[in-house]
Structure formats: C-alpha cells, structure tokens
Length: 131
Image 1 (cartoon, helix red, strand yellow):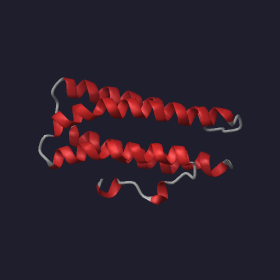
Image 2 (cartoon, helix red, strand yellow; image 1 turned 180 degrees about the vertical axis):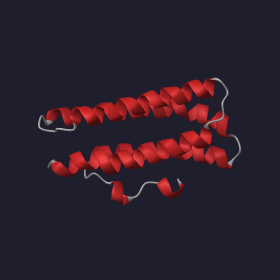
Image 3 (cartoon, rainbow, N blue to C red; image 1 turned 90 degrees about the horizontal axis):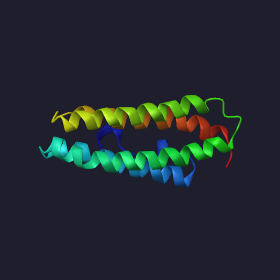
C-alpha cells in the first residue's frame, strides 16, 4: 500500500499481534486499490464492515494483553486511542452511507493512523515488557 505498507519495522515481537497488524494492512490496501480502479466509493463501502469487525477483534485481543500487565501506565491512553479509531470508522461509515466519496481520505487516514499507532503506542508497550 504505497509508502504505508507493512514492513518489518512494525514488528512488535508478538506473533499474534504482528499477524493481526499484517491482516489490517491487507484490509487497508482495498481502498487504495479501489481508487486506482476508479470504483472507490463502492469498494470502500464493501471493505469498511470487514475492517471494522477485524479492528474490534484486534483491539480486544491487544487490550486483553495490556490488562494482564497492571504496571502499564499508558493503558488508559492506549485504550482511548482505540476508541477514537472506532469512532472515526463510524464517521466514515456515515459519510459513505450518505454517498460521499471519501475513499482517498479514508485510505490516507487509515494507513497513517495504523503506522503511527503501531510505531508510537504498540511498540512502546511491547518493547517495555518481555513475553
């Protein structure tokens, strides 16, 4: 997915989490592919549900790991980042349902958010704890 695709710098060292992140990047390629194929709005609507469901699954799994480590001081902040992402996904869904073509905006937001979140929030936790 352009400059925001998966690369090994995003590895957390936790196989399950890394596999989840790779799957999320697979979902993120769909809006970009749709834009390139000129059917962006239709395809964006099609992938948003699956992406939303998988994101919630991943956040639940990640948050369960964080909850085991009571000393993680940024847990509340991290969880709030997840909630804000889910809220933004809802906003995208509303806009797409009103026939707005936000595919390019959605693709850019999702890929930038995921890279930033992994690099600045997830890695802080996973680098601090030994599993």
